[in-house]
Image 1: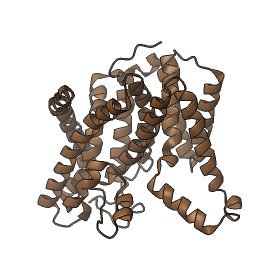
Image 2: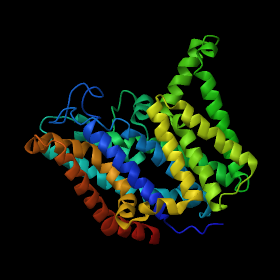
Image 3: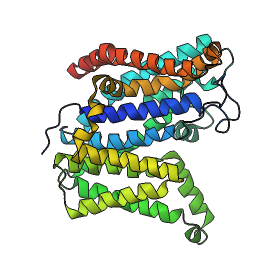
Image 4: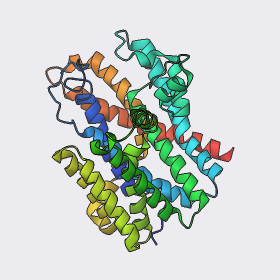
Length: 361
């Protein structure tokens, strides 16, 4: 069995790939036509080469599946697991939310992101819950939104943590079997429910409730990526060896992920993600470039970088990018480098100390 250190450098390299992909998407594609009705970039959509950069989130989900299984195996109980998750996620979310709110109150005179001006939206950051769910439950008392658009992906993560931790602490020995069987059943059921031939034979009221449920609890759409990460971890810890049943389960999710790619380019990107994990397990030396210290530091700081980059970054591009024209691409690239440096500084000088203090408490 592979000996797992608290951090695996190659996974940090994967995180670096994921966060850079997402940042490129948000700084060149997300806030310009055709994705957005108007352009928030002074260079408009001149450099919209990164339309598939948003798929970096799916890579993050695969990494989470891998890491959470490892974390569960090293954690004594359900409550302890959630304490660790809270220490990992909550302080950085609070800091990032505060920075975003202050930046927009002080500098966003055009109200390009009105939701980032609203203190009530801190509630979503504290709970990580989909704001639409809170609005639905407490309507019309609240009208919450994400303080920054990137926060949406934390909700599927939280759902996955709950799903995996409940199954794990019910039965550690049978976790992989139970998790795989239930996940495949859910994915297959949802696939059938999306089939138009089946829909016409079901009551419209039932379909409406089904659609509403999965609008709020959207883990099902990303569950194959988490599951693939879990099963890759099982391979990793057993030096690439596992039962034929688990290989069949992994094969199912691999085929399903490639199948749901809505374009050839997306399928190729998903195949690249899967190839990264396969090389990681069987041919790690082929990925030695990702063990670079700078790349690892970017990966380690990727959570905080993910939280602060979108709305703050787009605000800065909107205000300052015009001064770099006609070299419009220069400022976003410099901004990416600056935010990486800032996030590394925060992670190494602040986050570590907060985490150490909270763990001692």
